[in-house]
Length: 145
Image (cartoon, rainbow, N blue to C red; front, side):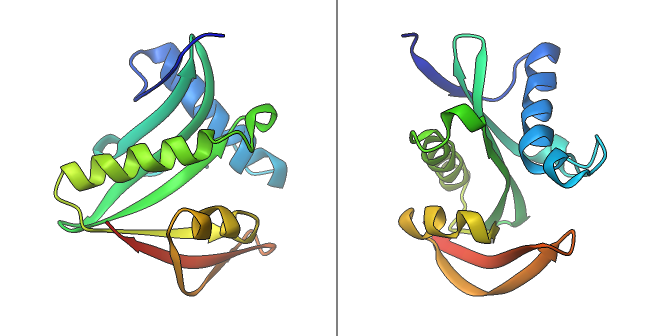
């Protein structure tokens, strides 16, 4: 088995795989259009991708809300690799990157299906969130680093 590495996408092919995974896991199941897996903060964000050789297994992103607080978004794990710790590896990588860049807090909006994952990783529910596409409840969560 090849070693696992976490790093941002490094070339156009890796960026395409990165956005494709986000689309297939987070948008396509709800019939959302391609492009909805991106937003205006991509260029200034911290991107994380977990690779096994050239195969992409998991992704996530953090962007700054203010100098001490970042928000994590777009966490996605290839379905065949879910439940194997890859999401936690991405989450911990993003937390470390935020902390090393002066961040003290992380906020996120967790889908109901991911609530236990974030609770297990030290996040606390601070309130109800939005309902995505009218059917996916979210919870506002945060963690002090």
